[in-house]
Structure formats: structure tokens, C-alpha cells
Image (cartoon, rainbow, N blue to C red; front, side, top):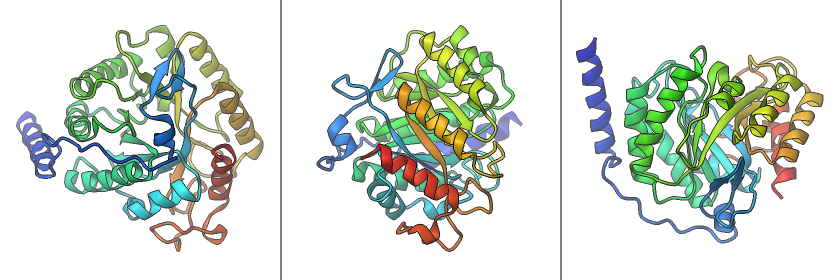
Length: 331
């Protein structure tokens, strides 16, 4: 098993070299005038607040693409441009599937192609982008290889935010913390300043465990909290408030209005409570998800074009709610 895993890791490295990620220096990109990145520049964390280059509080709001290996058709420049221009997203989340069929573990070349297409499109549109290692399981070696390539390629881009573990499920904070410290060191050896998002146990809801034992000695680190308003009520907001009061910076990198299964009716009253709360706390968030599965949390109908141009007739109920929630706040 050890030999097999070593061979797989060598293959992942060779794939990244083939794509030019291991040693390629990214050229400084031209930032579109009046775009979110042009107006705010490189991000930083001040206290518990995400802030722009001038030190002013900044709130990012946008949409998360679904797993790249399940909905690759939305991993294109047209979809990103539409989300930036029509939905007014100032951030998007590229969710690289690490698990399920045809994921990064089985097909790294295709995963990297999908991710770089979206990241490059976000840079071209002048918006921020979460590079999400979308896994529920522990894959330390694979994550180090992936983020070494991403940091090498995008270290000079103020657009990128590294999300190093989507949702640890049944792992303890001790395990998640050790993994995170290793990944932070890997990224910081290449990219010393761009924001890094750290997960927490039980699908990013045990944020209280972080408050009692945070990662120390690092700058520009935030912790992710995920909620589904139909399941997660005031108790999770209270828990998150307590963590922030203890000095934990929070980024809501995935959220939606229905049950945690991704299905069931949208609880619009609870969604509004969460929106009001995130507004008041100046929390950044990404709504889940740009996909076309037959479930409530998928925003698009199957007949929607892959490259955007989604009018009301192509949006499901949750898609309309998410788009309105983003548009109204990112004017």
C-alpha cells in the first residue's frame, strides 16, 4: 500500500509539472478597472475582520460552483463572467472534488484543468476566488501536492484565497489542526500573504473547538463555518458569535437556505435571519451551488446553458433567492 501511494504521489507531481504548475511563475495580471480586486487589492485579516489592502472592512459575497467532477460543464470562463457581471458576485468558489468518481485523486489532470480555467477567469474578471480542496476525508499528502502547485502558480495574484479542507466530518480538532498547520507551512513557503481558510470538525460547525485552541504564529488565517438554514438555527449563530468574541476570524465559505441534506424546502425566514446576521457581523459568504442536480440546493435547471446567460426561466427557486441576496448587497 505504501509503494502504491508513493507511485500515485509521483504521478500527481508529474501531472502538475506537465501543466507548468511546479516551477512556473505567474505573470502579474492586468486588473480590470473598477472591479472588486481593482478597488480592494490584496486582502488581509485585521483582528477578526477580512479587510482590503487599505485596512478597510470588506465583505465578499458570491456563489460556489458544485463539485468539479460532478458538474464540470460549469467550470468555464463564460459561467464565471456571468456570475461576476449579472449576479454581481465579487467572489466565487471553485470546488475541486476530492472523492466520488473521477475526482482529483483519480484524474488530477482534468481536475487541474477545471480549476485553473475558473481561477484564471476570476482573475480576468477582477473578482476573488476560493481554491477549495473539496474533501470530507483526510488527504494530507495529496493536498500538499495540490496547494504547492496552486501557490506556485498564483502567489502573485491578489485574487486567490486558499481553502485547504472543505468539510472535515468526524475528525477531531486535534487532527484538523495538525493537518492545517502542515498545509499552512506548505503554502507559506511559497505564498506568504494570501488568505488561507481553515476548516473545523463536523462539517465546519465545531467552531467552538477552534476558539479553545487556535492556530498561532500565523497571519491572514480565517476559519470556515458552513450552514444550511433549514437545519442549522440560532444555536450555530450563537456558537459562531462566541468564537468571534474569542478572536476567531470567520468566513462562511458555504451556505444555503434549505436542509443540510441539500434538499427540502427553502426556509426563507431563517435564511433572512442568517443574511441579516452576516450583514451585521460583516461576514463574507458563498452560496451553494451552481449545479443542475435534482435537489433544492442546485441553482440551475438541467437545460441551462453551461456558459451563463441564465434568465429567470433557467433558475430554480433557490437560484433566484441566492442571486437576489448577492445582487442586493453587492451593488
